[in-house]
Length: 260
Image (cartoon, rainbow, N blue to C red; front, side, top):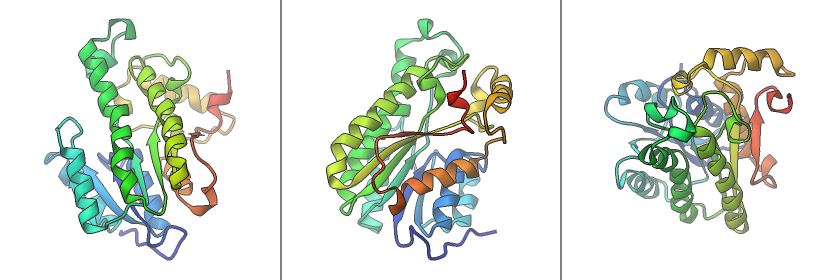
């Protein structure tokens, strides 16, 4: 079934969603939510192997652009923004939902993390958001919204999160600095921090099932989180209702982060 846009608070606005791998991706929940509010979308896919999984989803939300993006390839991100500028000439929002660390570093102690693994995790998961902000800035002539995805492990030690903890902490700090620098141009910047979700990325974490069960047990609102919940909260940040919100890490986790 196609998710058709109807007149809504984001009608006529154009945005880039980066990080859809399949129908279980947080970025896919965001794409559906933005489209439901009337936005026009550009969607990225990792490579030729990933395209068959992403292309049907792009059709479902009537994506106007479907573009390859492997952040490990020099010039790939610049090519995406060049195409956005050529086709649209503007950008009103973007969602960065991409993270990566080499499996041997992700599964090992931070103490033992290799320099190469740490730098690659930081490059793909954090630095790329800063690069996106720089490329988006000239296209957001009337202001806009930049959103990235974080996790509670940025603020507290979470078993098995390892190298991604410091990387996501850097990402959340970058959000605050970008918000301060871009705010005078009407560009808002946020991190969204979902609770545990059964995504492909989460499957790479040791002990994820235990983490999911713990969050379900301890969260004040114990309903299991869905990608649609995260998408709805993320899309709200791009509406005029959130025009004076910026620089925040927004938890979408049933309140789990407030519980000891």
